Structure formats: structure tokens, C-alpha cells
Length: 135
Image (cartoon, rainbow, N blue to C red):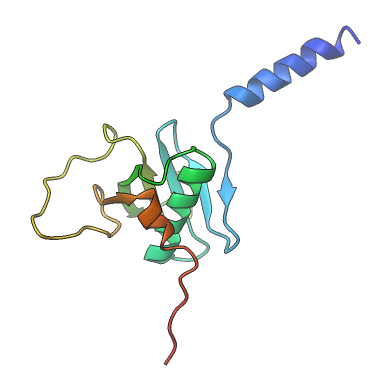
């Protein structure tokens, strides 16, 4: 028993110090931490705007504990995933300081996937469960 206790304590401390674990949505979209402030959304295929923003909002709320009014920023637009090597991933951050500083365009709402684009967690959550309208 004396040997087991220190081992269990070390294991628990390592788990608490580990970065946020991978998060997978029911549709197979994965979200993984790149570092302490940046996470990336990796869809099953090339991914849609809805896949990326939904993944970012769910990870921000469920894993990072963000509030509905917190802002999610695109840190890096579409590119190769740093965590999986897949071809299509977008990196996000909740940190305004870490977000790319791009000059604002007047009169244009930026809801895309380019570095510096942003929206609230609540607005991004609106991209979840979107179904294509078929004629």
C-alpha cells in the first residue's frame, strides 16, 4: 500500500497538468489543443463553415468553460492540421491578445474562416445542427 499511494498521487497530478484532451462531436469533427491558447478543429473531410464554427463553439463551452458572450477568434485559416496532419483544419483562440490583429473592414460582417475573423460563442453555436435544404 505504501508504494501504490505515491504512484497514484503522481498519476493524478500528471493528469491535472495535462493540456485539454481531444474532443469529438457526434458528426466526427475533432477538436484538439495546439497549445494553451490555441485549438484546432479537424473535420472528417474538407469540412464546412458550420463544421468549423460548431466545433469551435462546443470546445470553447464544454472543454474551456467559455461563456456564451465570449468571443472566438480564427487564429489561422484553413491549412494542414498540426495535431493530426490532415489536410483541412482551422485554428481558433479565445485570447484577444493571441488573435491576429487585422484592420477592421467598415460595414462588412466577417464570419468566414480567415485569420482575425471572429464571433461570439453563442453565434458560433448557431452553426451546429444545420441541415442542408434540399429542393
